[in-house]
Length: 313
Image (tube, rainbow, N blue to C red; front, side, top):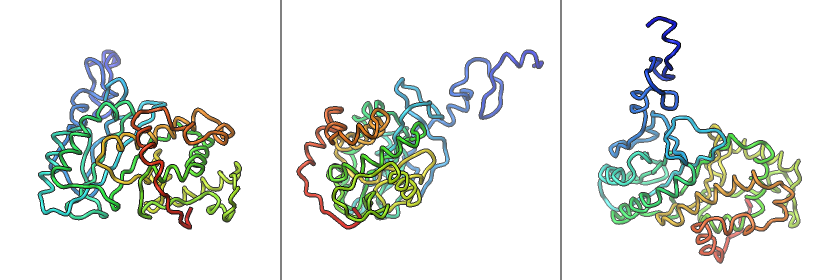
């Protein structure tokens, strides 16, 4: 093909081939089909993941690059069993229900039959649309004697590239302000994901009437970024352009699972919608209640739980 004609054809960003027709997310159809994850129930190892992430969008498209100004969330759900059974069979069964939506890994905090189910990044709309598939998968593993207990977690990763510094500080503020409600909603009874309070981190002691200033939030943001890791309720800066909400206990109840994702989404929405001064005047219910049916159900179910105070708060 001469150079003049070549300029009329798009070039695949992955393989460099000129394409007659339209590219899919910048790629030719062959590259797209090769990279789109369709599920593989036999894949199960420690961090055994070398393919592209597939981003599930509101319009039904699956892309390999996140769309701008879009909140994506992905989950890591840990399940375990005390029964002697084939993990490969369980993963294959899960794949029949969730093929393409998840992959599976081992996890050092679980038994040698434990499974970490890791979802593709999706918009909230897509998570809710696929609730039926996840419920079917949860019923399947429950029937195979898998469970979630105090040693299993549900971690929600959320994209944060669209947040500015002020919005990051608002997020830390509301999670601190509503810590008792968040701990109840998270259903955590262990000290696995410790909830470090702003006033302790910035050296303000145990002032009961403590109200963090902008300078306090600046200092706490730096503090929690340095603390990035697994022993904290919020793994901040541990992943590129992501925050990992680690406070949730594992669950095989589909309402609780979807509600936890909705809570994270609402956190991001609220810090984009409201100023810090507005958030200071708002209650937990003002921010989180009446937005999603599943989240309302979880708030109502957990509101009377007794929260055990501990020194790291």
